[in-house]
Length: 224
Image (tube, rainbow, N blue to C red):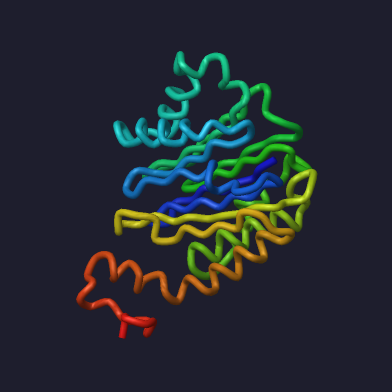
């Protein structure tokens, strides 16, 4: 019921995800500045994302981190229901789809990227995500949205998509972008609109966090 894209862009990491379920990004998206990015989807266990990032923080090897989490004794009885992706500071992304992953499921990897999905209209969707992202232009957030829209146009999931979200971490130390559409008939279009509103202000909010004395005012009451 989910398809997602995880990318590395210089020192930044970004994830976009969509689903027929509500609030997909609240459960699926896991990012850590300077470390990497991961998703935990299908029959989702949100604790597996932080586990992947903890392993990455120790040694930086995405393939090794995935093997550690999928092979952990505590996950032995449930890992077959999970679909995971992970991407580190260098190299390609890696993906795991357990034997109980729902419907048509697939993944695709590239240097600096990994895509995966379940309950898909076809196994081609993850490759569409990677190719569309590589061909897109603009800010990282805009490229993520473009890739997700391309995947939806290519068939997306078997059923309708109702939620979508994206997040980006950079060297600021927090999610410099964190946008969600938790329930809508057209969540990717709505997400694109949010990106358009957010991007002109994104860097100013980073400045507010790092150097408030130099940060601009937005003219709201009490903030002139």
